[in-house]
Length: 136
Image (cartoon, rainbow, N blue to C red):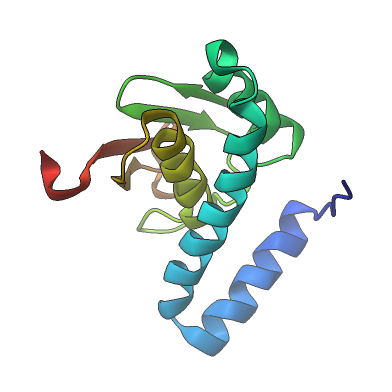
């Protein structure tokens, strides 16, 4: 399998390009891109179900998405997201899509995923909360 590496500054310029053309509509696109990436990460990790979250975290680190990520029962806490940039709102849309798919593949059910803390807003970590669709 081949991989493409982008620097954080290149990544940010691409994000700005999308925002300039699509405004906030691009955030949904970024989220869906993340879901596609999360599907592939999940497939790899499911080969060793007993180490599922550990493998997902290792892949996310190795691929440069985060410096570290810890998957807990209903939250994922990330440090050093490549998507973090100065903002008033959460910016880690692709990572949110990845996290959603990682949890969905493990639990075999559809979930809602929200970034409730973000380094971009000045928070210490990026924190993603997952819950069943409909909140229950």
